[in-house]
Image (cartoon, rainbow, N blue to C red):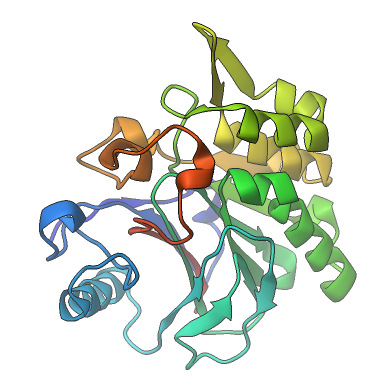
Length: 266
């Protein structure tokens, strides 16, 4: 089966690190979930989803163990994962582990999947960051978690921001831009574009800037993959595939989160 598997070239040198961003190509799902849907929360057939998950594990080389996911709610809760037999870490939008053989996964369909590694400490994390996550600074919160709980300095961290919706497609209203500007000031201003009297957010760049503000060096931040809305054959996109008002408050937690990303140690 052919799948889309985007890796971070700079991380290929790290022995034992299995990582990547999966697209929708391949898989057994049909209809609006057509392709490699690995989310049980979007209305797809659970048996088909399970087969998709098994296919992913086999193709990337996870033959023993599970991929731990979260009940993502567009918040800033972070949990530590220690149990390699765990299937779901509960309600959260960020996971961190130092455990060997633990595989972390985040599901996205426009929001930014962020994979974080601290190579010298053999630690990894996975973060789900939409505009609400960016507003709450979940990426910066993860950097502080590394520092405060594990003694990992921001300068020792690298992060990859995967396929997500770009400012080309992500039109929002004042209920989004207002809070972002109030929270992040110039950082938000730099990542909000105005075209034809409408506002568009560069979500991935915004999260990148938040990571930089937390002390992660720019040279250790990598952007992988295209705008999800612009690549219908490769990635799921909530905004592209749903007919709904522009106001982001209409989006419900978990909706159409069907593309996978993971940062795994083995």
